[in-house]
Length: 86
Image (cartoon, rainbow, N blue to C red; front, side, top):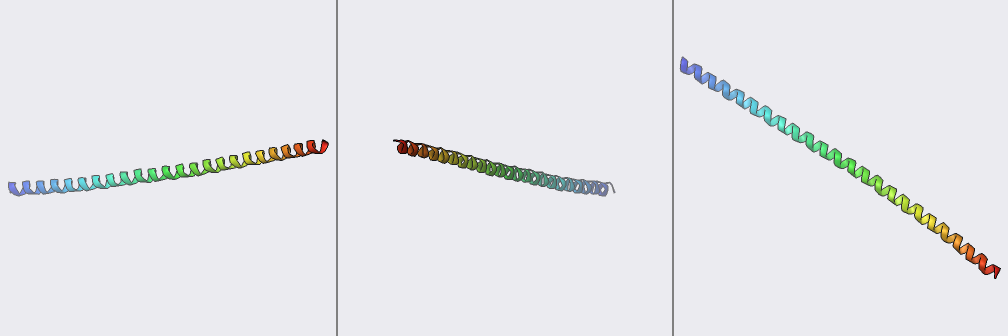
């Protein structure tokens, strides 16, 4: 009877350990999944920010090109007026 009791106790302990190990494994998997989702979200945010930054840089370049074009037009008009005056 004592031996049966000991065997039952060992079986219960093994069952508890198995359950604990399984719960721990699931917890680790969930934690890793959460970290992966956070990394994906961070990367997506970085991509969005980079896209915005590139768009702003392109808009700035376009404004500068327009400014230079207008400046060139003024210069050409001024030179033409000088030529007509002479």
